[in-house]
Every structure is written in structure tokens, then in C-alpha cells.
Length: 179
Image 1 (cartoon, one colour):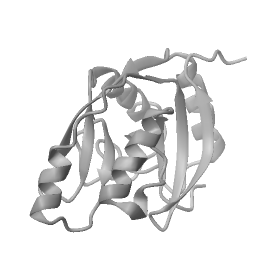
Image 2 (tube, rainbow, N blue to C red; image 1 turned 135 degrees about the horizontal axis):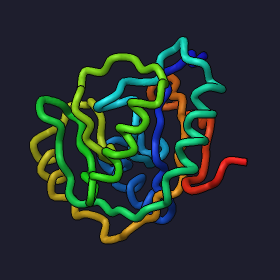
Image 3 (cartoon, rainbow, N blue to C red; image 1 turned 90 degrees about the vertical axis):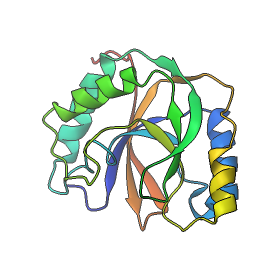
Image 4 (cartoon, rainbow, N blue to C red; image 1 turned 90 degrees about the horizontal axis):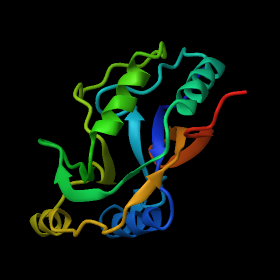
């Protein structure tokens, strides 16, 4: 059972993760230290993992799935904003691979809560919710993309207490065969 909001993600590795945390510290210090990741389930497209879902079942499904996904490279493109929100994020290059993994998770048999954002948009959040002044919005939208490719090779499950206290419940390397 999952007692707190729980998400499935691809972890962004160092040193790119630290660069994102630095940008977050300028615009959303409260969330600057959250894991830097691209959410696969728990945001847009799929809601968070259902509270009554079995932990071991989820981890077993994700282990099997991860064994069939090879690590892949991506990069951040530009800062965008979800319409009608205060959520700013880096968009990703070649979103097709993320969408493919998202679809696999959606059809995996894992139960999810509903989401207010039914269309999946792979992204890395920079700022959430707090109201932005016009200059801050311009600064965010003009933030230069990080000129670094990164290798995505780890899928994780995080529980997020009170919006700022993450706990990693599970992690698996992509392309790791199941014994």
C-alpha cells in the first residue's frame, strides 16, 4: 500500500541534476533539493499510484519493464509553462521515448489515481505553484537550456510527504536483465 503521493520517474544523473537544482534554488528554493527527474506517472497522463495498490506488485512490474528498456540519452530544450498554471519546466528533446515508456506503464496493470492533466508531457519541473512576478516569468522563460546530454538509466519510485520530503521507495537500472 502507498500511504503518501507516489510517483514513477526517470532520474536525471549528475552533473545535470545539480545544475537543475541550482536553477530551482533561484526560482523555487523550497523545492530545490527535490530529486531531479522526469515523471513517468504521477503528473500528466497518469495520476499518482493508487493508495490501495500493492507495493511488491508495482516493484515487480517495474523491474520486469526496466529490464526491457535500454538506457537512452536525452537533453533539455527550453523552459515552458503549463497553460493556466505557475508550473515552469524544461521540455525534453525527443519526447517519443518517454511517451513510449509512459504508455507501457499505463498498460502495465498498475492502478493509478485520476489526474487533472490527461495528456502526458515529459518534462523536468523547475518551479511549482507559487505566484510569479512578471520579471520572474520572463527570467524563467529566458533560462538557457543546459547544453548537456544525459544518460537516463535509472527508474525510481518516490513517495512525497508534505510536498517537499521525498523518500525513494524503489530504484532499478534500465536494461538490467531479471534473474
